Image (tube, rainbow over all chains, first blue to last red; front, side, top):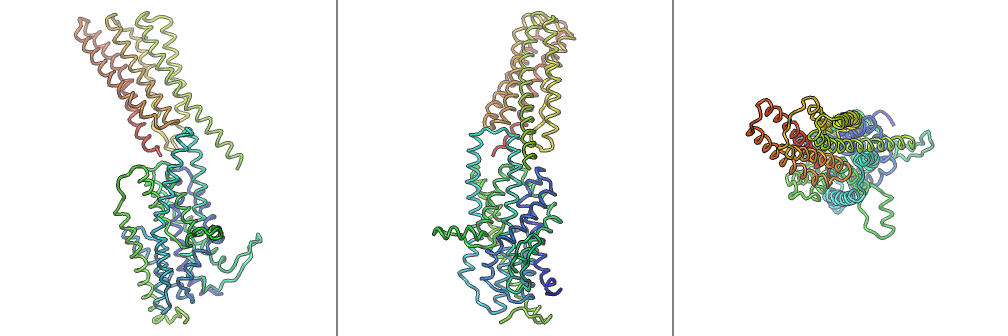
Length: 351
Length: 208
């Protein structure tokens, strides 16, 4: 392993850094914005649990991406991650709530086209259906949680001060769980494309934890996300927190838990195995968008509270992102791979 | 961690008790004020009135200290509106009675009593609404509605009383003095109403 590996890995690390800077606000934004938790505490908890989630449970969603397209050279993986990052950068400017998950899937398909590898259409359909299902599921969970909490509060007549005390603890716990789920689900976006070509070896940590080569890669990606959280998420957290101030702290908690559960459901290999062992339907392990899960939860609560209409403009923007993000990422990836291969003379795929 | 949790819960419990005590003080002040005005109208500046006036002053002092203490804890969390201890201007009104000793002829006693009752009732319902905000959000609206209704009644009552005073043959100085008292008493209900306006907005924000 030489410096070239880290040079090629840089696009993935950059993607991880931006994911940490942006998506941590979905988990701890309310708690920090409402000053219920200090930013320093939130950032440390988020970084630690994202790394644990990535290393411990990141393989499931990553395996699905591997099945979609196994990018077998480092330059190819580098360009796919870079194409995803550029797509996100471009689409975010038009204020469409897009997702790294959708960009990376598009980039992998772009690589498949360039390398003339077959793309499993049934898998693509399965992945796209999870994107549609993700906000709906998040909304449904949020509605169930909202009604349950409302019922419990009516019955318990908990003092507001005590309620806030429990909510503060709840926000920290939900944030930790959310960070774990984010790490587990979204590490595939950041490091998934590097798995087949990674030269990293197995390693044993000083405390005796044994890590496989993929887990070492995920640890590096998890650290990149953690650095993004610590160095650049404060401003976004404050903005999200202030926007969500209109919500009560309890509703904010419901939103964080719903989003975290959805990310966990789409990432947990253990849960999937458990459900399959009882012949129950299990969800595919696919990286999904935490921002879209949050929007789904907020809309679900809005409907449960008696909101008459859905925000069709926002729904329209999400649908546009489902279609446009992967297509744009695929096109950028295809063109970039062409340049990388023919101008810079890099091997972007092995036959 | 266990120690931190215990300390957090004990702090929460102490704050809950202080808030309950603050509401008790508001109710005490309203009831004592009603009693004090009745005593003044029958006995003027008697020893009993003096004691009641001192009692109101003490209640206001205690409530003020509690308010500062509670607000110090709550402001950082941006939790509730200003607790508005100034509703306890019961103290100022009763002290004014004591110092200025207004001449109130018996024909106005019933109406002044009625106005005092309405203002005190407004403050009592405001205290109950504020207590409900912490314990049972769904009842805040019921108490608020009562405050709005009673405040309107107190406005009407104050208007009629002012009209009767200025239609009377009392010297102008007397009329103006009594009108000033009526304003001060009616202000108690107005302050309660303003507080309820803010409380309702906070209730909507906090309602899950």
